[in-house]
Image (cartoon, rainbow, N blue to C red):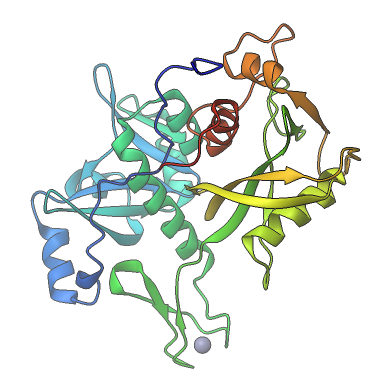
Length: 316
Ligand SMILES: [Zn+2]
């Protein structure tokens, strides 16, 4: 039987399939890290808080800088070792956010947020995973300068993958915050919602943070219950996506609704409702008569929705 809808080739999920070898075994070798930073082939992604600094080339934007180029942009508040690409070291060069903002007037640079870079395809797709790695890690450093156990200033060790407290000896590791993002399904219908932060026409999967002491499955069922008042049963894992805004991991799932009447939590959502398969397909294909849309292919929500329309399972 031919597929019911033809959406064309499946686009790559943003920030995934990193070409970087993280080379974690090198993080404890201070001499090796110092030599890597001095390596003529070392390249750095330059990030100041939410802003990424790109080079303006002729047609495409450059995502990486030599260390000399990066240092000329301002002093690094933090330097983190991302790993190796073709045996050449890659680093994240963390500028003070104010220093990055001050570069906005430069004619040879573009200072822009990572979402826009991804959605507009401003850099080669292989740069998105290391940019996500660098941005999430540097964000953690910006917010964890002091020990959460005793309040003393902490020190960066292991190439930026740990902060140690010299006073109480606590070791602090970079955090990742898991978020469930899911599509509740009832046969040929699914539930989409929209937040007031979305573009006016966009509808997406529901999502929420996994809480301490909670499984992915329980988080999926709880978030759906809280946001739209539906009870769900089986939860099928689909795929995951790093989401460095600032340090999330999106855990995508499909779930079977057991009840039909939805009650929208207006504190959380502007609206949510059932959509039938034909309408969602029109949204994904950008052919909806009222111009309603789904999120772009860079986001996992697009793939969760598309997989349901195509009857596919996760494969990333
Ligand atoms: Zn401490």
